[in-house]
Image 1 (cartoon, one colour):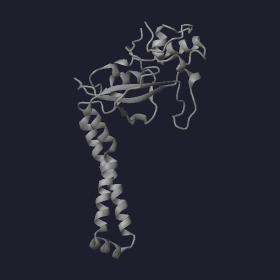
Image 2 (cartoon, rainbow, N blue to C red; image 1 turned 60 degrees about the vertical axis):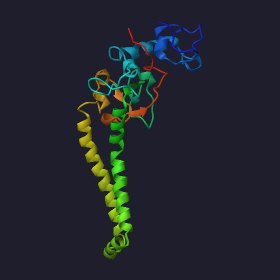
Image 3 (tube, rainbow, N blue to C red; image 1 turned 135 degrees about the vertical axis):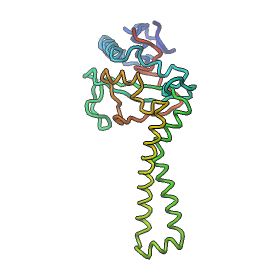
Length: 240
C-alpha cells in the first residue's frame, strides 16, 4: 500500500511505503516520530494498535457521506462529531496528567463520526439547554425585580430578598433545563445515537478495553466542520 500525504519523502525510513506508514498517517516526515525513535518498537505499537480496533477499523465513521449518528438511513454529512478514546496499552506509553483519568493512556484515537445538521443541532440543544434555561429565567427575574413596585415589596420584606430571588431563579432555570434535556434525550434517542458509546463501533471498542478520555459514561462529543487528518486512526485505511 502506498504512503499517504504529499510530504512522505524519506526513502531511508524503515517504514517508508509500508502499511504501517499509512496507518501512522503523519502526513509529513518532519512530524513523524520514526526517524528519532526505534522503528521496530513503533511498528510493534502500530500492529498492537490495529489489533485493538474492531474489525474494519474506524475510518468508515468519518469516510461515510451520510451521518453515522442517525439510526437507520443517515442524512447527508455536514460535519463531524469527535469522541477521544483511550486504551491502557501499551503500558510504556502511559502518561501522568491531572487532566486525564488515572491510568490514561497508552493509545489515543479520535472517533470521528460523520454528522448531519439535524444531529448536530440536537446535540447542541442537549449541551446548552440547562445554561440557556438558567440565563432566560434569571434575566426575566432580574427584569421583574427591577420593576419599582415589585422591588419595593421584596425589599420591604428583606433588603437582600431580591438577590435571593434571582439566585433561586438561576438554580431553578438550570434544574429545569436538566430535566427538559433528559426528556429530549429520550426522544432524540429513538432515531439517533445521542450517546455515541452506544454506536456499534464504539461498543465494539469498549469491549476491547477502550474508554472515553473525558466525561465518563456521558462523554460529550466535540462538534466540528473539519476532521482530524493526522495520527493513528485518522487514515482512510483498513487493517488486514
